[in-house]
Image (cartoon, rainbow over all chains, first blue to last red; front, side, top):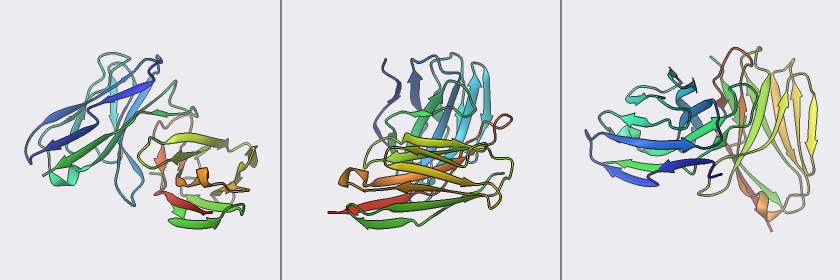
Length: 113
Length: 113
């Protein structure tokens, strides 16, 4: 199993550009989530999904969209990139939402100029 | 919503000594408390977790204690080794009923040879 995969590993955008961060898992996990990691601020939840067709907002959802059309994929879309979105983005998945280990992807380092 | 505070933000320990990282949480309904370790440039990985029906859990050199009354939990690493150098994150969530995992801001642990 590949586990949780993310693409790209690195990305540089200009302010106002849009892009999609890809996340996929091959463990048949119901629960998937997106976090951003900024220095001194830990991991903050952006959006999450408890199954195909179901998504909800986390702590910092503004400027991001998600969809979950399949169990395997959970892409994160930046609608109009801003310098404040410069961060490292992690996708994670677990078998179910509650009390189960979350497996993280390798991360995407995004810089917005 | 849940708020998790983590202290200290940095910790330096002589190799072989013990390290303790403390977290407090605000939501008395939280009942699941995982700890993640993140090595430099890598993804976070679960190292130990505890549920609210247990006061202490051990796994070799690491242990976690939980005080529900005071709403705090701690990570203890004994006989520290250079490979313990990393950033450690605590987290808390309510299960069932809340799919959101709230993380602390992290502790950078450095083991001095």
